[in-house]
Length: 427
Image (cartoon, rainbow, N blue to C red; front, side):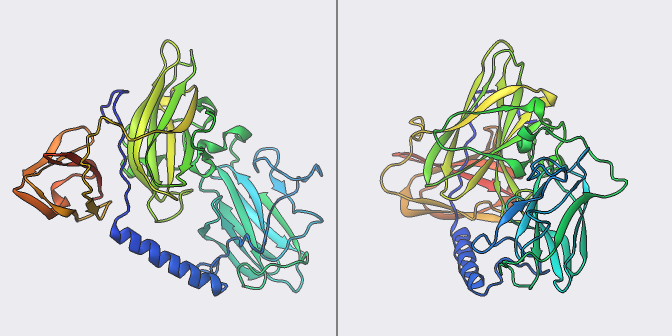
């Protein structure tokens, strides 16, 4: 467990490296190329996601005839039908909420002359590897939900992902498989007990209310979260929130407040997507953690500054009911100026650190030569792990083999003050 009192600060520096920018440029180029090739929404296995320009997402019908089914497919409701008059359109999708571990059979019939492929995507519209049945009529797909949340069944008749159809061409159903142990249906208000249902936070918007007593004690991602270095506490009663930066910002504040008398004790854990897999089933990079509210005699508020927010990057916040502690709280993201306590060099010099995160090595470079500087590197506990004085500094390569995996704070001191950078070591 990380030893950290409630006044400590979580500093996150996420400035993209040159290597990362090249990847972004290459991805954008490939994205545009595939978009015009009409195969953008298909992966190597022929799985199709939804093309929202040409297709739509609907909900299954409640079998009792009360309209759209918005609950979880579990317990008393173990089967749902299709939209409209028992038909589906080519290229469209149908949402369904499932509890982690639920074994479901998706089936299409009444499709004479119209074989159709079946694909399951997550709530972010990313295809789930292996959740695919090649075109057939009738057709079926057995699927086990990897997390509690919303999924989409995508139907494709002509093999062209995104090729919308206007004619009802068959019937589709979802049904819990026989002999499946069906978990209890969760309350509809706690979809955010997994990252797939993360509640989006707006900058300087109202505080969002949460209550970890509504969350499941375990989460399908608990083991994964621990495996990527989240060591503040064993995940328990977790709720998820997210914030996507609209512009590059120096900093923002996370406000986490308990409710009087809740006896709530929590941890706040911060992640970003690491580019592999989907955030719904993993694909996260752990940035750091901070002890949250510890309410023993009234309201307790923790204010955590995060530094270096990049436009378009989504930050994920996991509120963890520490050791099973459950209770009410509120969370909000607030804008703020960069802390005046940090005296950085302000003479036009630019200090670059790349690649970041680093696996084997990283470079530190300055736009101009700096005379008589000193460089220090401290770990997340504030312990000094590297220090070196230079007659002058312009560029140096650092071998990460001398560092343990984790987040480090690098400072370059000069006669004008210091420049501070964060470096994430992966090895």
